[in-house]
Length: 199
Length: 182
Image (cartoon, rainbow over all chains, first blue to last red):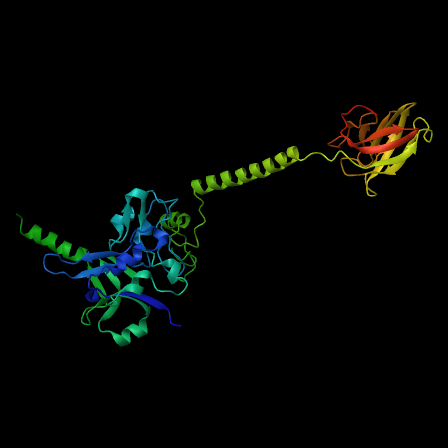
C-alpha cells in the first residue's frame, strides 16, 4: 500500500466545524480540540481554513523548547509536549511559523495536533480527516488525490530566511509556485515602505 | 547534526558546540535517553514502595500464621536405652527430617533437629563442651538450649519437645529453643 499523506485544501473548507468536534472527542487529549478553524479575513469573507500541525521536518517548536518536551517520531510526526517535561513557557507557541501550538492554562501544558498518532501509526485516518465532508482535510495516497483534484499540493514554505519543509501538504491553485513565500516578506516590504515615507 | 553524524555531509567532521549541545537534547524520539528528575523520583518511590509492601506482606504473614509447633507424638527411645552423654538419631516429624536425642544427665534429655540452620549440614554432639558442632563451617550450638554459640548459623537449632511416660520417651512436636529445658 502506498504511504498516506495528509493534505489540507483551504479552498474546500466550508466551516462546518466537524473536524473541531471530532478532534475534541478523542480521549487522548481529554476533550480539547487540537485543530483550529481559522477565519481568513473575516471582514471580507466567510472563508475558513482548518489548521492542523504541519509536522515540519525540522520542527521549530521542538528546537526552541527549553525543557526538551517536544519529540519527533522516526516517521516524522511531531508529538505534542510530554507532560512530565513541559514547563508551559509558550516558547513553541511563539516560535511555530504556522501558529499551531496552543498553551492550555488549566493543565499548564502546551498541546498540539499529533496527527492522531494512535490512529495514523496503525494505518487509520486522523479523526478530522475521517469526518471532513468536503475533503478539505484529506488523508490517503497522494496519487489518488492527484487523480481527482485540481491544484498543487506543496510542502515547502519560506518564512523570511527560514525554509520549512513539512510532512502535511497545503493545496494552492495550479499557477502558484512550488514554494510558498509567507509571513516576513510582506512585513519587510512594509517596513521598507515605512522607512521611505516617514509619517 | 540531526542525522547523528551519520550522513555523508557530516562524516568525519567534528560537531560544533551548538551541535554538541543538541546531541544531549535531541529532537528525535528514538535518540532521547534523558530521564527527568520527576521520572526518576517516581521510579524510586514506586520501587521502594513495592519493596516495602512486599516485605511488609511477608512480615505480616509470618506474624499472623501460627507456628507449626504441634506434631505427632512418636515414641523414640526408652529411658534406659541411652547412657549419659549418649546420642540417638531418629527422624521427626517426617522421614525427611533427621533429628537427635541427647541424654545430658540422669534425668535430662534434649532433642534437636540435626540440620544446621546455616546450610543444613548434620550437627554432631560434642560431649566435652556440651555443644553441638557443625563440621562444615564450624558453627556451634549450645546442647542445652540449641542457642548459637559461634560460627555462621543465623538461628538456633529447632528443638523437639519431649514427653516422658512410663519409662519411654516420646517426641511431641517442635518447640522454640527458648522454652524450658526438657
